Length: 352
Image (cartoon, rainbow, N blue to C red):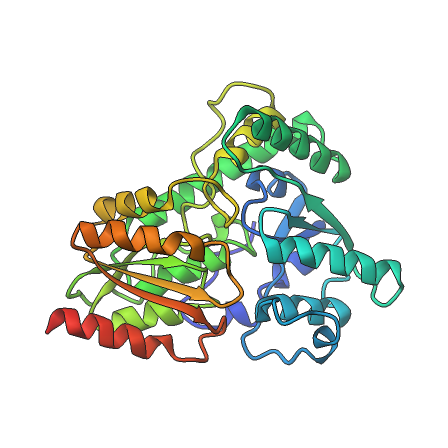
């Protein structure tokens, strides 16, 4: 197991794949609804493909339309540069539009011999809450496991490993006594290293706050939004976006069924992802009540279209409860249009 990493500085994120490059069987993934129970199966080391806010992408710009967010361009540019050549495979989810389109683009570019790199695979999940979707997702789990060479014993070991990670992330999320950016950094770092190597504490103490904010919408590229909330004298009570500390769901060990059935059923019901079919307004209200948030900030980058359809209903529900809400829609994915200033003005007006 890796030593515990230090997330109080930017050092780890300068090269988040360092552990994967020395692992026995490194695999990559793109998308946050791919079952952790498969990704955690020994002897794999799974790491999400990283992104860089200031990455120049001249090669990717030749192939990707404007509808691709900048983080996707970073991945394609790094793929073409050979950054992921050490990986066996990269799994893309169909549960996210950008992820599934990246899969098809990269597979076709490989077929044409324009790029090399690892073998791209697709996880074809179905997210409508009905028996046929659950059956489809269980079959998708079996198919992906077969493509990765995993049997039921491997999946059972993956469930055990993923359950340990679930418990760790749940315990970190339950203690919000540190500065808000710490929790975003832990959630982001968990995409690249096992949760066992994540820190449980931070030197960045919570300075105390005027109130609690729930961050919702798209997953930000880094801790910029969290820093803005803290700078305004508030704290982030939780994150209602895909990349959060609760994204792995509840432990599976005690659930009945063979390993693939257990994994598939939970994946089909998991609300993580823009293509999940659930009542986002009800979930937001539940999170606000559970975490004691007095305000909600929705931040959505322009290319993230799916969640935007639910924002109006969420806003109405929050305003009906008297919860102050700021909607920052159609923003730049890299925070270069300064949403931090909007957050500062919004929270400052609440304190006035």
